[in-house]
Image (tube, rainbow over all chains, first blue to last red; front, side):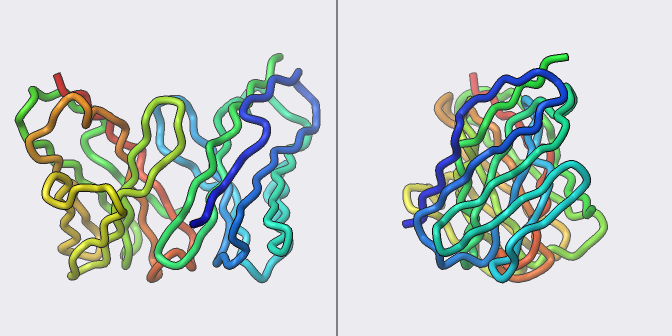
Length: 110
Length: 117
């Protein structure tokens, strides 16, 4: 059974800092890994999708890496802004199933 | 990105009534749709997977007769919570994929918050 863990559970940083969110999973037989953002009481916004054959994906200030063999992914956020405050979820895609991590609640203060 | 619309965004109902939540893919055909449930400050838990025209596949522990899922077209899936009780109060989120399974990117609806009194 796939288990996905995210560390840290919560993170508070001042504006401008670069930060790293971690995601680990137990079963390396995955199709893809996706990072999402969720604002309070809202649905999910897809940030980055990494296929199992890829090592990383970049979008603007976001960079996600994937090390399938070690069961790890990191989301790097450069020059954080207050608007980045949200819960970040990683989700591991297997066949017909997407397993979510517990999320990291990020607060970026001005 | 692709748009998935969920309706209603919130609903309050009395215990014992049934509630239907709709999930629509607005600008693509959704081969597969997924329904998730999220309790406060917890992650999303997959409830069921549905492919257009076939019966949904439910996760272990999810009651099929209580959470009825219909995926009658490539752009619409519905989740009906039958005889809702207070413990069914939760945030329900659907997602859609243009490809079978999870090989492709998933797009999520805005979620529906159900409160059962």
